[in-house]
Image (tube, rainbow, N blue to C red; front, side):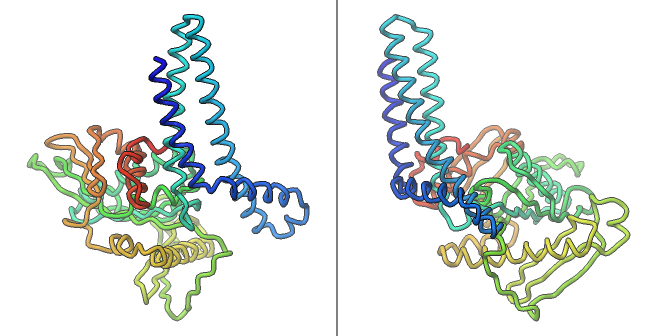
Length: 376
């Protein structure tokens, strides 16, 4: 038991060392002191937007630094308890303390992976866009299943989910939908889901009991604030209004409240049917368009143009990042990282953490072993 505890101690110490390095610990502590001092200045709130940005940075740094300190203290407490329990031959207490160490090791690994979220927009909220692809009604049903999957993942992690646009399928499911996921590091985690997702199952919409392959694509981009300048030439925009379908009641369906912007040079489209007011939908759609254009530029600067192109490829064979097989066997496999899960029902219910952690670790050059633990 003592050897087990020592092994966990080393494992946690390695994770904490990486955490401190990723955080640039000394500089982070100094920066937190600066932010705490500025937060006490009443003049800070003369600029509400700047104050909110500062407070978000302060909260993020405080959570990271306090989290590492608490982790180290909890580990030491558990080790002290094991030593005391063994001295008194109290096996039950020692076992409980070792269990705590296993929990702390998992938390350390989660924080280690999370510390890799250091991209320019990783801490931001995110838009998640799901589009049905090849497969007809099955693909539209698959797109709706994916929308539910990301909604359940977000809710399980305490994120707020808002539907900004949804286009219903011809017979079932959806043709497309966009949701806004709001919470710490939402974009950092969800950006790993960009690409084409393939489903293999016996179709519930056909009577021949044959396996059907369907595709849906996911595109993720960060929510940006007004401090980030994105120049859009009005001459480059095409604006369409339309009657919204789906949620919103009779008023939405009777008026052209939906707004769609098309950015002609890039072909990027942003639409909103979230509100009954066309004016508000126009503002929402413009914010989404600015976010899409910012993401495009962000990925260019980060030398991730391949990821951008993946979001624009045909939604079909040869472009998928993950396969979800329901028949003839049960398996979900990520084709980028090799991560597999034999419980598709759990994955479709939002169990995506291991896939996200592995993809994130791969993108920043970490080893597969560093990504094998659950991310959250």
